Image (cartoon, rainbow, N blue to C red):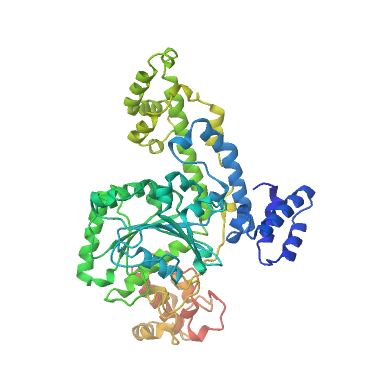
Length: 582
C-alpha cells in the first residue's frame, strides 16, 4: 500500500468504527506527523468519498485488524520487489499464473462449491447465508448454469459478468481472459448477510454426465474451475447419497481440484434420505471411488450429513449429522482468522514454482546452440521439447535443493513451449533466484494473527443446547442439576467402603482405587488436581465422586480439560475459585 504506515493507519481509521466524514478527517489528522503522508491520505479519503465507495486498497480494513493490514502491505511489497521481477524475467505468467494484484491480497477468504447437479450446493449456500441471493435457482434438474459469486454488501443486487470483471476494486478482472462466452455464464450476487462480511462464496454450474453434455459448454470449464480453485481458501466438493456415479466431467474436475487437495472438503449430502445400514454402504462406496479418482495414499475425510434447513427425513444419525456439520462450519469459520497465513502459504508455493520455472527456461536457452538460433532453430527446439522429461531430470540432478513436486506437468509444458522462441529466454540470474529463495527473511509469524469474528446464526459464536456436544466433558452443561449426581451412587458406595478421616478419603486408599482404572499416573494426577477443589490434598465425598466421574469419561474416550468447567464444580464448592473456568 503506497504512502507508508501512516497512510495505513489513516485508512484503517477512515473505515473503522466512527465512520462519518468528520471522524474520518480527524483520523487522517491523527495518522502521523509526516505531512506528505497526511496529504496522500486526505486525497485518497476525499476522492473515494466523492466516488461514493472505498478505494480498493482499503477493502481489507472491512474485515482485518490494523496490524494485519500492515502485514498485507509488507507482503505486497515483498511480492513486487522480490518475486514479481523473477516472474517477469522468465515469462512465468505465460506458463503458469497471472501476476498478483493488490485486490488479490485484499480479497476476503473465498469458499468454492463444486459438484454434480442436484447435490445441494446452492441449498447449502442458502443455508449458510440464511436467505436467497439474486439469481438463485434450486431444483432437481441442472439449475445453476453459471459461476455465481455471492459477496457481501449493503445494497442487494445482481452484477453481470462483464461488469464484475471491469470493476478494478474486485479481484476478478483476470477472468476477462476467458472471453465473452464465459462472461455470459458469470454473475455476482451482492447480499446483505452477516457471514458475507468476512467470507465470499462461489457457486458453480452443476457438473453433467457424459461427453455429450460437456461438449455443450461454450467455454473451457476446467480452466475456469482451476482459476477459482487457485484463489479459493476452501473447496467444498459435494456428492448426493442417492447417486454416487462419477461422470467423465466430474472426474476431469476432480483432476483439477486434487492439485489443491489441502483446501478440499468432501461432502456426502442428503444422508438423511437413506437408512443407517444403507448409509454405511454408500459411504464405503464413495471412499472407494474417491480413492481411485484422487489417487492419494491418504483417504480424504468425508463430511456426512444434510446441509440445509429442512427437517431430517431419517434422524437416526442426527447426532452424527450435527457433529459433522459443526466440524465443517467451524473449519469455514476459521478462514478469515487464517487468511493471512493462507496468503503467506500461497506466496511461498508460488515462489517455489517460479524458481523452478526460471531454472527450466534458462536450461532450455543454454541447450540451444548459438548457430542453431539462426539455422534449424525449429528442429532443435522440437528435439528439446520431445526430450523435456530428461531435461527436468538433469535440472533436478544439477540443483539438489529443487523439489520434484514443484516441477510443472510435462505434457502441459510441452504444449506451451511449442509456440515459444527459446532464444528469447533469459539466462539464469542467481541474484533474482536468491531474492526469491529468501522471500520471507525478517518476517515473524506473530504478525499474521488476525482475530476476526465471523457473524452467522448457522455458525454461532455462543454456545447453545443445540450446538454443544452433550457428551463427555460437555455432558450436563445446560442441566440445572449437577451431572455427577446421575452417576454417583456407585461412587458413594466405593467411598463409604474406603478408609476416611474427618469425612475425607485417605490418600493411599483413594490411590489404590484410582489405579484400578489402569490409567497412567500422569492422567490420574491431573484428575486428582481437577477434583481437589479446595486444594487441601484430600477428597471429600463430592470431590471423590467428581474424580470417579472424570475417570469414567476419560475411559470412554473423552479428553480431560486443563481447568474444570463451571458445570462440573460440585455445588458444595461453588464459592471456591480454584480450578474454575468462568
